[in-house]
Length: 233
Image (tube, rainbow, N blue to C red):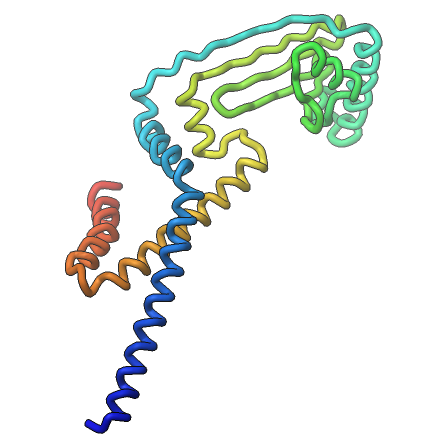
């Protein structure tokens, strides 16, 4: 073989090897970065996957705390005016006298709830009726609500907590967690996809030297399909 042809072949082989090494190095970098970003949440979501799968076997002991107070006269009058306004709007809309309009509490009442019980009522709609106003305050791992009687201004605040496991389960599902946590779950899912895809490509690079690579990958794909077909009806 002429020397120049041999050198050309060697150069092409070296270029391919160098390109392969660069891609493999880049994949490893993306893989460990995505692993670092998603590690804590992978542990959380894996653990809560088990707890959700056995939710009926995990005993929850809800703790309920009730607090009572009386709305000051000034806020009471403003709340009554708002209730009448909402009742009138509902009557115009559907001819009913039972309310039905969902609007926020007056600013002064919101400030009173914040000062009295630390309740964040801003931006939250209430359920108005002729006799009372009800503010639902759902939260992960529990529930809460405020009820204010319009006639005498008696206010009741109830908080229910169902324990750490319930909290983690709700975080897993994104239940009553707000938009910030929902965005976080989406970003975490993207990091997991990047982690899985870069791992698959790294397996492809090393598959020639590891005969069990593709059989294991195929088993991981086939097993859930078989279980779904055979045991889920």
